Length: 94
Figure 1 (tube, one colour):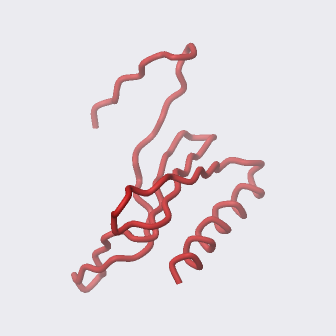
Figure 2 (cartoon, rainbow, N blue to C red):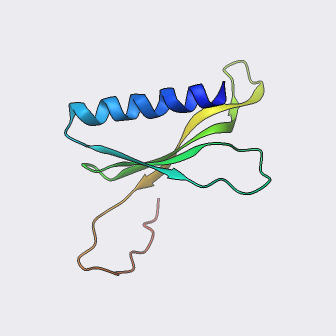
């Protein structure tokens, strides 16, 4: 079941990338050994610089307030391009 959700999420992302000539790029992330988590992916919006992590086993709060584990996206923030290779970019304040 988890693998099915993972494939569905990655297919949705890849379908969106064809619509905008590769706007979204997804890279698989290795899970921590012995953790509850399963599949994870790093997702980058190459046009606007937004970053998400998709996880198939994330703690989610339902509309009724109950908490459970399930697939979900976690917004990580927005990137900006550097001016040269290897440049250290400091995190911007919120």
